[in-house]
Image (cartoon, rainbow, N blue to C red):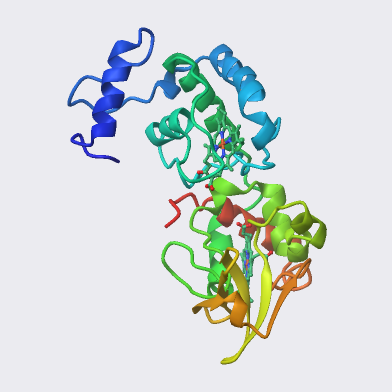
Length: 277
Ligand code: HEC
Ligand code: HEC
C-alpha cells in the first residue's frame, strides 16, 4: 500500500472527495475502494465502456490480444484498486497501454470494477481433500523439486503460491494429467502470445541449458534451469536457441496417481491463494 504521504494517494483522495457518489475515504481513515460498493448494473456499464474503449486491444471478454489478458486476479501493474484506477486513467508509460479517453471518475471506477470482476474466479467446490493433497504434493508427488509454494521448494517450474487465484479446477486437473496441453504451440507464438510458459534449450559457449523461459526481449533471454538457477543470455552470442513448442518439462501424473489423488492435489492447489512474489 502506498503511504499516506504519497502524492498519488493524496491526489486520489482529493478526487474521491470531489466526486459525488464515489466512496468517500476520510482523511487518515482506511482507503475504501469504490469498487466494493458497485452494483451489478454499474459493473455492466463498466463492461459497455470496456467494449468500446479497451476490447480492441484486450479482447471482447478481456481474454487478451494486442494487450495482455485481464482475466487474472494478479495484475502486474495493478496490485490494488488504486493502482488499477491509475493504470486505466493514465496508461502505462513507455508501453502500448494508452491513457484515458477522458471519462469522469465514476466511469473509470465502473471500468475498473469490471476489470476486477474478470479476474475473480468463480468459487468452485473442491473435488477432494486439500490436506491429503498437501501430503501428496510434499511426498510421492515430489512437486517441491520443481515448484515453490509458500516459500518451500525450488526448481524450474512456476511459483504456485497463488495458483488458486490464477487457475480454475479444470485447468489444474489438466496441468497435472496432461502438462503439454497448455504449453504454447508454434501457432500461439506466431499469433504473438509470447508471454506464456515456454521450454527452451540453449547452447552457449559455456554449455547447454534446458529450462523455462522467464523473460525475453529482442536482445536477451532469461531462463530458469532444471535446478532452479537463473541464467541470462545475450541472444547474439548464442550458438543455438530452440523453443520446444508443445513440450512441457513437467511430467504427467495420470498414470502415477489415482483419480482420487489428482482430486486431492487439485484441491490443495485451489487452496493456494497467497500473493505472488
Ligand atoms: C492500444 C491498445 C490498448 C488499449 C486501447 C488499452 N490497452 Fe490496456 N494494455 C495494453 C498493453 C499493450 C498493455 C501491457 C503494457 C505492458 O505491461 O507492457 C496493457 C496493460 C493493461 C493493464 C495492466 C495489466 C497488468 O497485467 O498489469 C490493465 C489493467 C489494462 N491494460 C486495462 C485497460 C483498460 C481498462 C482499457 C480501456 C479503458 C485499456 N487497457 C485499453 C494495450 C491497450
Ligand atoms: C520436473 C519438474 C516438474 C515437476 C516434478 C512438477 N512440475 Fe509442475 N510445472 C513444471 C513446469 C516447467 C511448468 C510450466 C508449464 C509448462 O511447461 O507449460 C509446470 C506447471 C505446473 C502448473 C501450472 C501452473 C500455471 O500457473 O499454469 C501446476 C498447477 C503444476 N505445475 C503443479 C505441479 C504439481 C502439483 C506437481 C507435483 C505433483 C508438479 N507440478 C511437478 C515443472 C514440474
